[in-house]
Image (cartoon, rainbow, N blue to C red; front, side, top):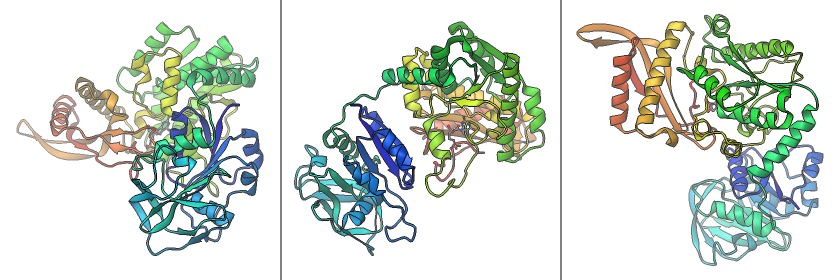
Length: 515
Ligand code: XMP
Protein backbone atom coordinates (compact mmCIF):
# COMPACT_ATOMS: atom_id res chain seq x y z
CA UNK A 1 0.00 0.00 0.00
CA UNK A 2 1.20 3.52 -0.77
CA UNK A 3 2.12 5.47 2.35
CA UNK A 4 0.48 8.88 2.58
CA UNK A 5 0.48 11.19 5.56
CA UNK A 6 -1.95 13.97 6.39
CA UNK A 7 -0.77 17.06 8.21
CA UNK A 8 -3.66 18.86 9.90
CA UNK A 9 -2.78 22.52 10.14
CA UNK A 10 -3.80 24.46 13.23
CA UNK A 11 -2.18 27.68 12.02
CA UNK A 12 1.50 27.29 12.93
CA UNK A 13 3.98 29.43 10.99
CA UNK A 14 6.13 26.36 10.35
CA UNK A 15 3.63 23.68 9.32
CA UNK A 16 5.04 23.65 5.82
CA UNK A 17 8.41 22.52 7.20
CA UNK A 18 6.80 19.32 8.47
CA UNK A 19 5.62 18.54 4.95
CA UNK A 20 9.02 19.28 3.48
CA UNK A 21 10.80 16.98 5.93
CA UNK A 22 8.37 14.09 5.41
CA UNK A 23 8.49 14.35 1.63
CA UNK A 24 12.26 14.61 1.68
CA UNK A 25 12.31 11.28 3.48
CA UNK A 26 10.41 9.71 0.55
CA UNK A 27 6.79 9.71 1.71
CA UNK A 28 3.99 11.78 0.22
CA UNK A 29 2.08 14.09 2.52
CA UNK A 30 -0.31 16.98 2.21
CA UNK A 31 -1.33 19.81 4.48
CA UNK A 32 -5.04 20.27 5.17
CA UNK A 33 -6.68 22.92 7.32
CA UNK A 34 -7.96 21.39 10.57
CA UNK A 35 -11.56 22.12 9.55
CA UNK A 36 -11.37 20.43 6.16
CA UNK A 37 -14.35 18.39 5.03
CA UNK A 38 -13.93 14.95 6.61
CA UNK A 39 -14.69 13.25 3.30
CA UNK A 40 -11.48 14.74 1.90
CA UNK A 41 -9.50 13.18 4.73
CA UNK A 42 -11.17 9.82 4.21
CA UNK A 43 -10.56 9.88 0.46
CA UNK A 44 -6.92 10.81 0.96
CA UNK A 45 -6.28 7.40 2.50
CA UNK A 46 -3.89 8.48 5.23
CA UNK A 47 -1.54 5.98 6.81
CA UNK A 48 -0.72 8.48 9.55
CA UNK A 49 -1.76 11.91 10.82
CA UNK A 50 0.37 14.78 12.12
CA UNK A 51 -1.28 17.59 14.08
CA UNK A 52 0.63 20.84 13.70
CA UNK A 53 1.24 23.57 16.26
CA UNK A 54 -0.89 26.69 16.33
CA UNK A 55 -1.36 30.02 18.08
CA UNK A 56 -4.16 28.80 20.41
CA UNK A 57 -4.65 27.63 23.96
CA UNK A 58 -6.98 24.65 24.30
CA UNK A 59 -8.98 26.93 26.62
CA UNK A 60 -9.57 29.65 24.00
CA UNK A 61 -13.24 30.21 23.25
CA UNK A 62 -13.05 29.01 19.65
CA UNK A 63 -10.01 26.78 20.02
CA UNK A 64 -9.88 24.34 17.10
CA UNK A 65 -10.18 20.64 17.92
CA UNK A 66 -9.09 17.37 16.36
CA UNK A 67 -12.21 15.88 14.73
CA UNK A 68 -13.20 12.61 16.41
CA UNK A 69 -13.17 10.90 13.04
CA UNK A 70 -9.39 11.32 13.02
CA UNK A 71 -9.15 9.12 16.12
CA UNK A 72 -11.68 6.72 14.55
CA UNK A 73 -9.31 6.12 11.61
CA UNK A 74 -7.09 4.21 14.05
CA UNK A 75 -3.92 5.28 12.28
CA UNK A 76 -0.80 6.57 14.11
CA UNK A 77 -1.00 10.20 15.26
CA UNK A 78 1.78 12.63 16.12
CA UNK A 79 0.81 15.90 17.81
CA UNK A 80 3.29 18.76 17.76
CA UNK A 81 3.08 21.65 20.25
CA UNK A 82 -0.59 22.78 20.13
CA UNK A 83 -1.31 19.45 18.42
CA UNK A 84 0.22 17.64 21.42
CA UNK A 85 -1.78 19.77 23.85
CA UNK A 86 -4.96 18.95 21.95
CA UNK A 87 -4.20 15.22 22.07
CA UNK A 88 -3.69 15.47 25.79
CA UNK A 89 -6.78 17.61 26.38
CA UNK A 90 -9.11 15.56 24.16
CA UNK A 91 -7.93 12.14 25.34
CA UNK A 92 -8.31 12.83 29.07
CA UNK A 93 -5.06 14.45 30.26
CA UNK A 94 -4.65 17.91 31.77
CA UNK A 95 -3.29 21.01 30.04
CA UNK A 96 -2.69 23.89 32.42
CA UNK A 97 -1.89 27.51 31.91
CA UNK A 98 1.66 28.12 33.09
CA UNK A 99 3.60 31.14 34.32
CA UNK A 100 6.75 29.65 32.87
CA UNK A 101 6.44 29.87 29.10
CA UNK A 102 9.06 28.10 27.02
CA UNK A 103 10.24 29.94 23.92
CA UNK A 104 13.39 29.07 22.02
CA UNK A 105 15.99 26.49 22.91
CA UNK A 106 15.33 24.02 25.72
CA UNK A 107 16.99 20.84 26.91
CA UNK A 108 14.93 17.68 27.14
CA UNK A 109 15.94 14.64 29.17
CA UNK A 110 14.73 11.24 28.01
CA UNK A 111 12.95 9.47 30.87
CA UNK A 112 11.25 6.55 29.09
CA UNK A 113 11.72 4.73 25.83
CA UNK A 114 9.13 4.66 23.04
CA UNK A 115 8.96 3.67 19.40
CA UNK A 116 9.15 7.28 18.22
CA UNK A 117 12.54 7.78 19.89
CA UNK A 118 13.78 4.28 19.04
CA UNK A 119 17.54 4.05 18.35
CA UNK A 120 17.64 7.82 18.38
CA UNK A 121 17.42 9.08 21.94
CA UNK A 122 18.32 6.43 24.56
CA UNK A 123 17.26 6.78 28.19
CA UNK A 124 19.02 9.57 30.05
CA UNK A 125 20.04 11.45 26.88
CA UNK A 126 19.89 15.24 27.06
CA UNK A 127 18.96 16.88 23.76
CA UNK A 128 18.48 20.45 22.59
CA UNK A 129 15.05 21.15 21.09
CA UNK A 130 13.09 24.23 20.05
CA UNK A 131 10.03 25.14 22.07
CA UNK A 132 7.37 27.74 21.51
CA UNK A 133 4.45 27.25 23.88
CA UNK A 134 2.64 28.87 26.78
CA UNK A 135 0.40 26.16 28.26
CA UNK A 136 2.00 23.03 29.66
CA UNK A 137 0.86 19.50 30.24
CA UNK A 138 0.49 18.48 33.89
CA UNK A 139 -1.04 15.06 33.42
CA UNK A 140 -1.11 12.74 30.41
CA UNK A 141 -4.21 10.81 29.32
CA UNK A 142 -4.79 7.31 30.72
CA UNK A 143 -2.52 4.76 29.03
CA UNK A 144 0.13 7.37 28.11
CA UNK A 145 3.58 7.80 29.64
CA UNK A 146 6.01 10.70 29.88
CA UNK A 147 8.93 10.20 27.52
CA UNK A 148 10.89 13.42 27.91
CA UNK A 149 10.93 16.29 30.39
CA UNK A 150 12.39 19.77 30.62
CA UNK A 151 12.92 21.66 33.91
CA UNK A 152 9.55 23.36 33.43
CA UNK A 153 7.64 20.70 31.41
CA UNK A 154 7.15 17.31 33.06
CA UNK A 155 5.63 16.03 29.80
CA UNK A 156 7.69 17.60 27.01
CA UNK A 157 6.93 14.40 25.14
CA UNK A 158 4.47 11.61 25.84
CA UNK A 159 3.53 8.37 24.16
CA UNK A 160 1.20 5.45 23.93
CA UNK A 161 3.01 2.81 21.86
CA UNK A 162 0.00 0.53 21.82
CA UNK A 163 -2.30 3.11 20.26
CA UNK A 164 0.64 4.59 18.34
CA UNK A 165 -0.18 8.13 19.49
CA UNK A 166 2.64 10.55 20.37
CA UNK A 167 2.92 14.12 21.56
CA UNK A 168 5.89 16.49 21.31
CA UNK A 169 5.62 19.88 22.99
CA UNK A 170 8.65 20.98 20.99
CA UNK A 171 8.96 21.46 17.22
CA UNK A 172 10.82 18.64 15.42
CA UNK A 173 10.34 20.36 12.06
CA UNK A 174 12.67 23.31 12.70
CA UNK A 175 16.43 23.22 12.20
CA UNK A 176 16.98 24.28 15.84
CA UNK A 177 15.84 20.80 16.92
CA UNK A 178 18.85 18.80 15.68
CA UNK A 179 17.21 15.38 16.11
CA UNK A 180 13.91 16.66 14.61
CA UNK A 181 14.23 15.28 11.07
CA UNK A 182 15.15 11.91 12.48
CA UNK A 183 12.13 11.97 14.82
CA UNK A 184 9.81 12.65 11.88
CA UNK A 185 11.60 9.89 9.99
CA UNK A 186 10.98 7.52 12.91
CA UNK A 187 7.29 8.48 12.92
CA UNK A 188 6.99 7.87 9.19
CA UNK A 189 8.91 4.63 8.98
CA UNK A 190 8.88 3.00 12.44
CA UNK A 191 5.53 4.12 13.82
CA UNK A 192 3.51 4.33 10.60
CA UNK A 193 5.50 1.54 8.95
CA UNK A 194 5.79 3.60 5.79
CA UNK A 195 7.60 2.74 2.58
CA UNK A 196 9.50 5.28 0.59
CA UNK A 197 7.60 5.74 -2.64
CA UNK A 198 7.55 9.49 -3.18
CA UNK A 199 9.96 10.45 -5.92
CA UNK A 200 9.76 12.49 -9.07
CA UNK A 201 9.92 9.53 -11.43
CA UNK A 202 6.70 8.09 -9.98
CA UNK A 203 5.11 11.49 -9.70
CA UNK A 204 5.86 12.37 -13.31
CA UNK A 205 3.89 9.39 -14.61
CA UNK A 206 0.99 10.03 -12.26
CA UNK A 207 0.71 13.69 -13.12
CA UNK A 208 0.91 13.05 -16.87
CA UNK A 209 -1.98 10.59 -16.57
CA UNK A 210 -3.93 13.13 -14.54
CA UNK A 211 -3.43 15.89 -17.13
CA UNK A 212 -4.60 13.56 -19.88
CA UNK A 213 -7.75 12.80 -17.93
CA UNK A 214 -8.45 16.45 -17.11
CA UNK A 215 -7.87 17.81 -20.60
CA UNK A 216 -9.35 15.06 -22.77
CA UNK A 217 -9.36 16.19 -26.40
CA UNK A 218 -9.40 19.92 -25.65
CA UNK A 219 -6.67 22.47 -26.24
CA UNK A 220 -4.40 24.01 -23.61
CA UNK A 221 -2.36 27.18 -23.74
CA UNK A 222 0.54 27.64 -21.38
CA UNK A 223 2.10 31.00 -20.60
CA UNK A 224 5.87 30.67 -20.39
CA UNK A 225 7.65 33.20 -18.23
CA UNK A 226 11.23 32.19 -18.90
CA UNK A 227 11.42 30.55 -15.47
CA UNK A 228 11.68 26.90 -14.56
CA UNK A 229 8.14 26.41 -13.18
CA UNK A 230 6.20 27.26 -16.32
CA UNK A 231 8.72 25.33 -18.43
CA UNK A 232 8.35 22.17 -16.34
CA UNK A 233 4.56 22.56 -16.47
CA UNK A 234 4.68 22.91 -20.26
CA UNK A 235 6.90 19.86 -20.75
CA UNK A 236 4.65 17.69 -18.58
CA UNK A 237 1.57 18.84 -20.45
CA UNK A 238 3.24 18.29 -23.77
CA UNK A 239 4.14 14.74 -22.74
CA UNK A 240 0.50 14.22 -21.78
CA UNK A 241 -1.35 15.74 -24.74
CA UNK A 242 1.28 16.47 -27.36
CA UNK A 243 0.30 19.19 -29.79
CA UNK A 244 -3.00 19.98 -28.13
CA UNK A 245 -0.67 22.31 -26.20
CA UNK A 246 0.38 25.74 -27.46
CA UNK A 247 2.88 27.78 -25.45
CA UNK A 248 2.81 31.55 -25.35
CA UNK A 249 5.68 33.79 -24.37
CA UNK A 250 4.63 37.38 -23.75
CA UNK A 251 7.40 39.96 -23.55
CA UNK A 252 5.79 42.52 -21.27
CA UNK A 253 8.78 44.87 -21.30
CA UNK A 254 9.32 44.10 -17.62
CA UNK A 255 12.01 41.48 -18.05
CA UNK A 256 15.71 41.51 -17.34
CA UNK A 257 18.34 42.30 -19.90
CA UNK A 258 18.25 39.98 -22.94
CA UNK A 259 15.96 37.54 -21.13
CA UNK A 260 13.14 37.32 -23.65
CA UNK A 261 15.47 36.71 -26.62
CA UNK A 262 17.63 34.23 -24.74
CA UNK A 263 14.70 32.15 -23.53
CA UNK A 264 13.05 32.06 -26.96
CA UNK A 265 16.29 30.98 -28.58
CA UNK A 266 16.85 28.18 -26.06
CA UNK A 267 13.26 26.97 -26.14
CA UNK A 268 13.02 26.83 -29.91
CA UNK A 269 16.38 25.08 -30.18
CA UNK A 270 15.60 22.49 -27.53
CA UNK A 271 11.90 21.72 -27.87
CA UNK A 272 9.54 20.99 -30.68
CA UNK A 273 6.47 22.51 -29.01
CA UNK A 274 4.31 25.14 -30.75
CA UNK A 275 5.32 28.55 -29.36
CA UNK A 276 3.75 31.94 -29.97
CA UNK A 277 5.97 34.87 -29.02
CA UNK A 278 4.41 38.28 -28.57
CA UNK A 279 5.87 41.64 -27.77
CA UNK A 280 3.29 43.46 -25.70
CA UNK A 281 5.67 45.89 -23.95
CA UNK A 282 3.83 49.01 -25.07
CA UNK A 283 0.48 47.66 -23.97
CA UNK A 284 1.79 46.79 -20.48
CA UNK A 285 3.69 50.05 -20.04
CA UNK A 286 0.68 52.10 -21.20
CA UNK A 287 -1.64 50.36 -18.77
CA UNK A 288 0.86 50.85 -15.94
CA UNK A 289 1.46 54.53 -16.67
CA UNK A 290 1.18 56.66 -13.54
CA UNK A 291 0.41 53.68 -11.27
CA UNK A 292 2.44 53.49 -8.08
CA UNK A 293 0.33 51.22 -5.90
CA UNK A 294 1.92 47.72 -5.81
CA UNK A 295 -1.38 45.83 -5.62
CA UNK A 296 -2.85 47.84 -8.49
CA UNK A 297 0.26 47.12 -10.55
CA UNK A 298 -0.09 43.40 -9.84
CA UNK A 299 -3.78 43.34 -10.76
CA UNK A 300 -3.24 45.29 -14.00
CA UNK A 301 -0.48 42.92 -15.07
CA UNK A 302 -2.47 39.77 -14.16
CA UNK A 303 -5.49 41.07 -16.05
CA UNK A 304 -3.53 41.99 -19.14
CA UNK A 305 -1.84 38.60 -19.29
CA UNK A 306 -5.23 36.89 -19.19
CA UNK A 307 -6.63 39.24 -21.85
CA UNK A 308 -3.75 38.32 -24.14
CA UNK A 309 -4.05 34.59 -23.40
CA UNK A 310 -7.81 34.74 -24.05
CA UNK A 311 -7.31 36.45 -27.37
CA UNK A 312 -4.54 34.03 -28.44
CA UNK A 313 -6.73 31.10 -27.38
CA UNK A 314 -9.39 32.31 -29.82
CA UNK A 315 -6.83 32.50 -32.62
CA UNK A 316 -5.90 28.83 -32.24
CA UNK A 317 -9.56 27.84 -32.45
CA UNK A 318 -10.36 28.13 -28.75
CA UNK A 319 -8.51 26.63 -25.81
CA UNK A 320 -10.50 25.35 -22.90
CA UNK A 321 -7.55 25.36 -20.50
CA UNK A 322 -4.83 27.73 -19.34
CA UNK A 323 -1.77 26.06 -17.80
CA UNK A 324 0.23 27.67 -15.05
CA UNK A 325 3.28 26.77 -12.99
CA UNK A 326 1.60 27.41 -9.63
CA UNK A 327 3.55 25.81 -6.75
CA UNK A 328 2.43 24.34 -3.45
CA UNK A 329 3.90 27.29 -1.56
CA UNK A 330 1.76 29.72 -3.63
CA UNK A 331 -1.26 27.62 -2.71
CA UNK A 332 -0.37 27.42 0.98
CA UNK A 333 0.38 31.16 1.16
CA UNK A 334 -2.86 32.15 -0.49
CA UNK A 335 -5.29 29.60 0.95
CA UNK A 336 -6.63 30.36 4.35
CA UNK A 337 -6.08 27.80 7.04
CA UNK A 338 -8.12 29.37 9.77
CA UNK A 339 -11.40 31.26 9.39
CA UNK A 340 -11.20 32.52 5.85
CA UNK A 341 -8.28 34.16 4.12
CA UNK A 342 -5.34 35.07 6.30
CA UNK A 343 -4.17 38.65 5.95
CA UNK A 344 -3.43 39.04 2.27
CA UNK A 345 0.18 40.12 1.80
CA UNK A 346 0.44 40.24 -1.99
CA UNK A 347 -1.64 39.13 -4.95
CA UNK A 348 0.70 36.60 -6.49
CA UNK A 349 -0.37 36.63 -10.05
CA UNK A 350 -0.39 32.85 -10.34
CA UNK A 351 -3.00 32.56 -7.65
CA UNK A 352 -4.45 35.75 -6.26
CA UNK A 353 -3.96 38.15 -9.16
CA UNK A 354 -6.09 36.37 -11.75
CA UNK A 355 -9.20 38.28 -12.75
CA UNK A 356 -12.54 36.68 -11.86
CA UNK A 357 -13.76 36.98 -15.44
CA UNK A 358 -11.21 34.48 -16.76
CA UNK A 359 -12.92 32.18 -19.22
CA UNK A 360 -10.44 29.31 -19.30
CA UNK A 361 -10.13 26.57 -16.72
CA UNK A 362 -6.75 26.08 -15.04
CA UNK A 363 -4.33 23.20 -15.43
CA UNK A 364 -1.74 23.37 -12.65
CA UNK A 365 0.42 20.25 -12.65
CA UNK A 366 2.88 21.63 -10.04
CA UNK A 367 0.25 22.68 -7.55
CA UNK A 368 1.32 20.01 -5.05
CA UNK A 369 5.08 20.50 -5.40
CA UNK A 370 7.70 22.51 -3.56
CA UNK A 371 10.32 24.38 -5.59
CA UNK A 372 13.09 21.83 -4.95
CA UNK A 373 10.72 19.08 -6.14
CA UNK A 374 9.96 21.05 -9.32
CA UNK A 375 13.68 21.35 -9.93
CA UNK A 376 14.09 17.58 -9.42
CA UNK A 377 11.19 16.99 -11.83
CA UNK A 378 12.79 19.36 -14.32
CA UNK A 379 16.02 17.33 -14.17
CA UNK A 380 13.94 14.18 -14.68
CA UNK A 381 12.53 15.84 -17.83
CA UNK A 382 16.04 16.60 -19.06
CA UNK A 383 15.99 20.39 -18.64
CA UNK A 384 19.58 21.67 -18.59
CA UNK A 385 21.03 22.77 -15.23
CA UNK A 386 21.51 26.41 -16.19
CA UNK A 387 17.74 26.69 -16.67
CA UNK A 388 16.81 24.54 -13.67
CA UNK A 389 18.93 26.53 -11.24
CA UNK A 390 17.82 29.98 -12.36
CA UNK A 391 16.69 32.26 -9.58
CA UNK A 392 12.89 32.62 -9.37
CA UNK A 393 11.53 35.66 -11.17
CA UNK A 394 8.10 37.03 -10.23
CA UNK A 395 5.24 37.10 -12.75
CA UNK A 396 4.84 40.91 -12.53
CA UNK A 397 8.56 41.19 -13.32
CA UNK A 398 10.47 44.40 -12.84
CA UNK A 399 7.24 46.33 -12.23
CA UNK A 400 7.46 45.30 -8.57
CA UNK A 401 11.18 46.06 -8.35
CA UNK A 402 10.74 49.58 -9.64
CA UNK A 403 9.16 51.31 -6.69
CA UNK A 404 6.65 54.00 -7.58
CA UNK A 405 5.55 54.85 -11.11
CA UNK A 406 7.10 53.05 -14.06
CA UNK A 407 8.74 54.85 -16.95
CA UNK A 408 10.90 53.56 -19.80
CA UNK A 409 13.82 55.62 -18.51
CA UNK A 410 13.64 54.13 -15.01
CA UNK A 411 13.18 50.63 -16.43
CA UNK A 412 16.32 50.96 -18.49
CA UNK A 413 18.29 52.20 -15.43
CA UNK A 414 17.03 49.25 -13.39
CA UNK A 415 17.81 46.71 -16.13
CA UNK A 416 21.39 47.97 -16.45
CA UNK A 417 22.06 47.96 -12.70
CA UNK A 418 20.51 44.50 -12.31
CA UNK A 419 22.62 43.04 -15.06
CA UNK A 420 25.85 44.38 -13.48
CA UNK A 421 24.84 42.98 -10.09
CA UNK A 422 24.11 39.51 -11.49
CA UNK A 423 27.30 39.62 -13.52
CA UNK A 424 29.34 40.28 -10.34
CA UNK A 425 27.50 37.50 -8.50
CA UNK A 426 28.24 35.02 -11.28
CA UNK A 427 31.87 36.12 -11.51
CA UNK A 428 32.26 35.60 -7.76
CA UNK A 429 30.79 32.07 -8.14
CA UNK A 430 27.93 32.89 -5.75
CA UNK A 431 24.90 32.48 -8.03
CA UNK A 432 23.98 28.96 -6.89
CA UNK A 433 24.37 29.80 -3.20
CA UNK A 434 21.72 32.49 -3.46
CA UNK A 435 17.97 31.90 -3.76
CA UNK A 436 17.32 35.23 -5.47
CA UNK A 437 19.30 38.38 -6.14
CA UNK A 438 18.08 41.55 -7.81
CA UNK A 439 18.23 45.32 -7.81
CA UNK A 440 15.36 47.50 -6.64
CA UNK A 441 15.15 51.05 -7.96
CA UNK A 442 13.87 53.58 -5.46
CA UNK A 443 11.59 56.43 -6.54
CA UNK A 444 13.76 58.97 -4.74
CA UNK A 445 16.80 60.87 -5.89
CA UNK A 446 19.76 61.84 -3.77
CA UNK A 447 22.64 64.28 -4.14
CA UNK A 448 26.06 63.04 -5.14
CA UNK A 449 29.30 64.36 -6.52
CA UNK A 450 31.01 62.97 -9.59
CA UNK A 451 34.08 64.49 -11.22
CA UNK A 452 33.66 67.76 -9.30
CA UNK A 453 30.05 68.09 -10.40
CA UNK A 454 26.87 67.77 -8.41
CA UNK A 455 24.57 64.86 -9.33
CA UNK A 456 20.96 64.41 -8.36
CA UNK A 457 20.16 60.81 -9.30
CA UNK A 458 18.26 57.72 -8.23
CA UNK A 459 19.25 55.48 -5.33
CA UNK A 460 19.01 51.72 -5.71
CA UNK A 461 19.00 48.77 -3.38
CA UNK A 462 20.73 45.43 -3.82
CA UNK A 463 18.74 42.48 -2.49
CA UNK A 464 20.01 38.89 -2.13
CA UNK A 465 18.50 36.19 0.02
CA UNK A 466 18.96 32.57 0.91
CA UNK A 467 15.81 30.48 1.28
CA UNK A 468 14.57 26.95 0.74
CA UNK A 469 11.20 27.87 -0.74
CA UNK A 470 10.72 31.61 -0.47
CA UNK A 471 8.28 31.46 2.44
CA UNK A 472 11.02 32.57 4.82
CA UNK A 473 14.37 34.02 3.86
CA UNK A 474 17.63 35.40 5.26
CA UNK A 475 19.67 38.14 3.67
CA UNK A 476 22.85 36.88 2.02
CA UNK A 477 26.09 37.86 3.78
CA UNK A 478 28.25 39.24 0.98
CA UNK A 479 31.75 40.40 1.82
CA UNK A 480 32.17 44.18 2.05
CA UNK A 481 34.65 43.81 -0.75
CA UNK A 482 31.99 42.34 -3.04
CA UNK A 483 29.43 44.99 -2.11
CA UNK A 484 31.92 47.82 -2.58
CA UNK A 485 33.04 46.51 -5.97
CA UNK A 486 29.47 46.08 -7.21
CA UNK A 487 28.36 49.50 -5.96
CA UNK A 488 31.31 51.16 -7.68
CA UNK A 489 30.53 49.44 -10.97
CA UNK A 490 26.85 50.38 -10.84
CA UNK A 491 27.51 54.03 -10.06
CA UNK A 492 30.24 54.26 -12.69
CA UNK A 493 28.44 52.37 -15.45
CA UNK A 494 24.76 53.25 -15.00
CA UNK A 495 23.80 56.82 -15.74
CA UNK A 496 21.02 57.81 -13.39
CA UNK A 497 22.17 56.04 -10.21
CA UNK A 498 24.51 57.75 -7.74
CA UNK A 499 23.86 55.73 -4.57
CA UNK A 500 23.72 51.99 -3.82
CA UNK A 501 22.52 50.38 -0.60
CA UNK A 502 22.21 46.76 0.58
CA UNK A 503 19.02 45.37 2.12
CA UNK A 504 19.79 43.34 5.26
CA UNK A 505 16.30 42.38 6.38
CA UNK A 506 15.04 38.82 6.47
CA UNK A 507 11.55 37.50 5.67
CA UNK A 508 9.69 37.91 7.96
CA UNK A 509 9.50 40.77 8.84
CA UNK A 510 10.18 41.96 5.25
CA UNK A 511 9.21 40.11 2.11
CA UNK A 512 11.69 39.11 -0.58
CA UNK A 513 10.36 41.47 -3.25
CA UNK A 514 9.86 45.09 -2.27
CA UNK A 515 6.29 45.31 -3.58
P1 XMP B 1 7.69 37.64 -1.46
O1 XMP B 1 8.06 38.96 -2.02
O2 XMP B 1 6.22 37.47 -1.26
O3 XMP B 1 8.10 36.58 -2.57
O4 XMP B 1 8.47 37.30 -0.22
C1 XMP B 1 8.21 35.19 -2.36
C2 XMP B 1 8.64 34.56 -3.67
O5 XMP B 1 7.56 34.69 -4.63
C3 XMP B 1 8.01 35.42 -5.77
N1 XMP B 1 6.89 36.25 -6.20
C4 XMP B 1 6.08 35.94 -7.24
N2 XMP B 1 6.12 34.92 -8.13
N3 XMP B 1 4.20 35.79 -9.22
C5 XMP B 1 5.19 34.86 -9.13
O6 XMP B 1 5.22 33.97 -9.97
C6 XMP B 1 4.09 36.83 -8.36
O7 XMP B 1 3.17 37.65 -8.47
C7 XMP B 1 5.09 36.91 -7.34
N4 XMP B 1 5.31 37.79 -6.32
C8 XMP B 1 6.42 37.37 -5.65
C9 XMP B 1 9.21 36.23 -5.29
O8 XMP B 1 10.06 36.58 -6.37
C10 XMP B 1 9.83 35.25 -4.32
O9 XMP B 1 10.56 34.24 -4.99
